[in-house]
Amino acid sequence: MTIRRQPEDFIVEEMLTSAASAIVRQDQGPFALYELHKKSTNTPDAISDLARELRINPSDLAFVGLKDKHAVTSQYVTARLLKAPVTVGKGNWEARRIGWLNHQLDADMVAGNRFKLVVRDLAPARASQMDGYARQLMPADKRTLFIVNYFGDQRFGSARHQQGFAAPLLLRGDYLGALKLLIATPSRTDKQSLREFRRTLAQGWGDFVKVLPRLPRCADRRAVEVLAKNPGEGDGGICCTSLFHAANVCVFLSIVFMESHGPPAIGRTLP
Image (cartoon, rainbow, N blue to C red; front, side):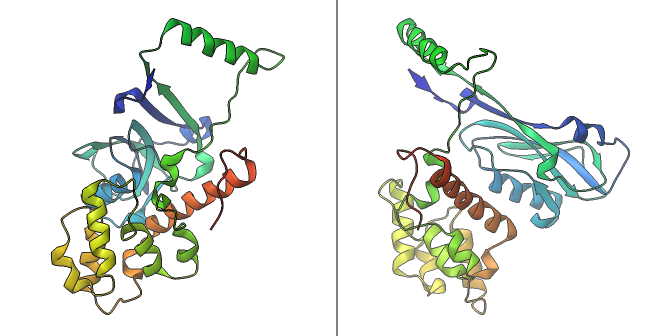
């Protein structure tokens, strides 16, 4: 049995509430509402690219939640933009304007997510066994089966090095410390190229001008480039955008949820 062999095997579709759908207007308003479709990329990168293509600050975009990278996903995004193109896209993402709103998107406007999961090479005996498990979990009224979808390792990948989470450091204002945890702390599960990048950066941490030429080009290198060009911003805050904060705090809140609600086998020790 194989689950999620390819991105198309996992489809995630964000859904608006009926109340939110009712207030979407077709005449121009202060906020353009886009449906963002992406494949094999994470939400923060797609949002950053979208802001760059629209020539606005990432803070002018609003979205709810982070969607999986190894999947085909769609979610809603509002842009504070009067002249908003109908479609905009680059590489593995595309945003289509579906209307306008009088205010930016917020969590109350999203009803939830619809998931489609492809399971391959499922033997008949295994399928029958899974059906039996489902029947055992079925409530007495036998109407709907609900299974708690606990967060998995993918949500906590930024802390796979077992050195803790970046969010507590961000909340204390230790931006450089948070950044070092995220991009300069190697993990045994990293790909070799990424592990070498992080080891090199860790060895030269603090002298960003000197270490920059030794680093291969990759997404994490951008932060080092910014620090090297702005030596006066030594606290690292220049690299920590609102989106950066939100993503890392979201991860930390997830582990708090797991510790307080998940079974012992799933819960992890908080830093």
